[in-house]
Picture (cartoon, rainbow, N blue to C red):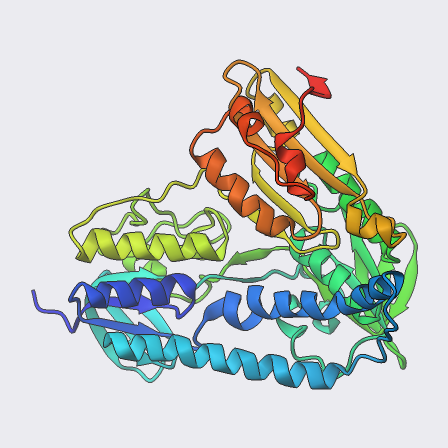
Length: 450
């Protein structure tokens, strides 16, 4: 049977562009469709612009610390529009790089929406029908806003990089890492931030670490309220008023919902090919990223496996090597490190203490202290280093770090954990002094047993 392309990729995010480029490098004839901007959520409306906002929001604290170290320093005022202009210029630059990567690989790019018309057919928004031996769905996820009275008045994380002005009074609804990161960002930029959530903040993470992060967020001035459910949001002459089920009402200049993300499969046409979906709309795949329809694959957040950009990239690469490179391989989704860019920052890999207890006896090692840099400046920052260890095998099951640059530290710890490192091997590693990270190899006695 003859096809227009060997591979058609729907979605120009991290997973899709990697799969397309690698497949083309293996000699496949490849096309890709992206209805928005090349680069996807991470580059255009996620990790990259968010991290740049994290950097911007940290400057007032840096100047305050500089003063404590003897520098004559002043922060001045923050120019949101100047920052936003430079931010979007950087995103434009990155998008050009992503697009050039596809062009250089020989991938035919369609800047329009594509939907699935059958097991081997894709239809473009302009009506063009294209056949492909293989179809890869890599459309990612989108912010979820529940339906309630006044939901049309709220913003999502997608909107925060396009604000015309910095809101003076900001409500962020949600308790996950996206909500908590933006709460810290906008507080650092000068907004009065409240964060409301129907359950404890960061509840999916290690409780001891979560408690310290939330405590420090509150100490920085973020007005955190847990176990709060919003009934409606009303527009006023001066802003928007949030009405909670417990009777509280408060007016804000903007209300942002960061209450999770859902797979972006609505209207994609996957039912036309008989592709199986999970209840939340995610595309169900096996360990090879293959759906129940042999010609259709899916990678990244649309599969709702591990929703992280580096995971999508690896899944896309493995798919291309397997199908087009005669080098079959799967991705191990175990022990994937991640970072939460709150203040303080959080790096984590492996099981939380609570999860580990469900699997058998454990030992827990914890070191909590004031970091040298902050302590000298008279700051109140706290650092927490935590290892969760299997009591029987002594293998390190979880490593959790709450500290400045925790994301940088957890990346290196994750290498040792992926290799199956034991607590004894951590202990045998000589410390780098004076650093915060040395605590990971100097904790001798467990603080808790099971």
